[in-house]
Image (cartoon, rainbow, N blue to C red; front, side):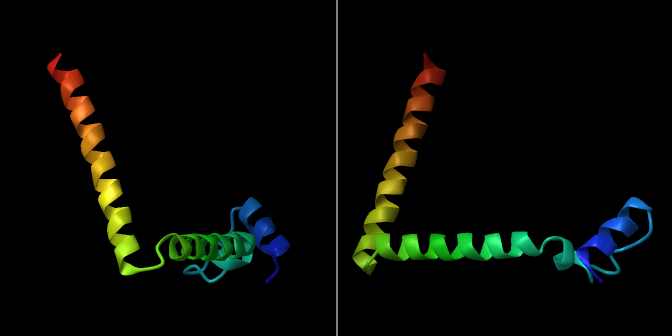
Length: 79
């Protein structure tokens, strides 16, 4: 079934999605976009953390940032 046919059936109110059978017919471009974005995210994270030590440093920096933000909010609430 083509994208055009599925969209036609949807406009007419007929059931075009039989148990998700045609889900990727409509959302095929999104599937490719999600795959490309996933590859970019994986490549970026791998290049940012070359070693286990690098991963530890990244996690540590994230924790410090969260702690600092929490402290700032706590001080604003107290004052």
